Length: 313
Ligand SMILES: Nc1ncnc2c1ncn2[C@@H]1O[C@H](COP(=O)(O)OP(=O)(O)O)[C@@H](O)[C@H]1O
Ligand SMILES: [Mg+2]
Image (cartoon, rainbow, N blue to C red; front, side, top):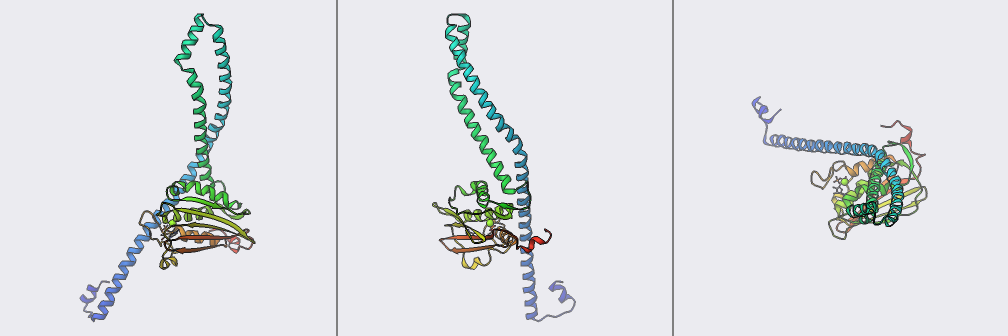
């Protein structure tokens, strides 16, 4: 019901009531705008999730052909060694054929195909291609590890450093121009967790750290260690730091200080949920202009996790 229709019905409102109504209307409009914004962000995060799934699927598909290309390459390399040996023998025979028409043809052909150059260049090309294939294989493996397409959503014993390395490889593109990465890994036992979800947390923290860095000597320090029946992992940056006013809101869904398109405001709230599901803690320590340090603490085993006794949602 609008204010105008109230008046049309013969209802008379005093100025205070009118003002209150106006305020109410303004608040509703604002709420509406917030809702549309939230919906937009949800759609965006949904898109991101499906892109992740797609990437994992593609990685899975590529893995197989890359596997046989890699293995055939090994065989091809061995064959080439044999072929070169054979060629050397032919070259020796060439001297014996000097002066004959066959000898002349061999000599001419050798010049035409630039045999000496080929002998040098083929091994180089092979080595470069092998390096390229190895890199593709590594990326595919990292994508697979990251999304854990093989064992979706399973509690497993995982090496968190390995998860961190895979995640670093995946976000390397985002980080490499912003910061160097310093690793101070301690000794970690394998930790019972949903590995792909923990990797998701690592990714959110790493990308946030990289976004926060605007200086040329950007640095992200990753450290880890064990304390009794828990492990801890820290990701620290020398970026902008977080305003104390914002600090209490960073884990709220949709809270972001980034322009639309760069931030959804969901990274930390999702990460919080994931760590909580693991009966762990996520803590933050930040100083404006100095940097930010996130600390994740996780129990090594989940035996006392009541949430695991309930059906998964
Ligand atoms: N390492 C960091 N340094 C500075 N600010 C950070 C850092 N990590 C998170 N923040 C702040 O917390 C907000 C929420 O983070 P997040 O939930 O990941 O959402 P988003 O990255 O999409 O904005 C960010 O917009 C930013 O203001
Ligand atoms: Mg984020």
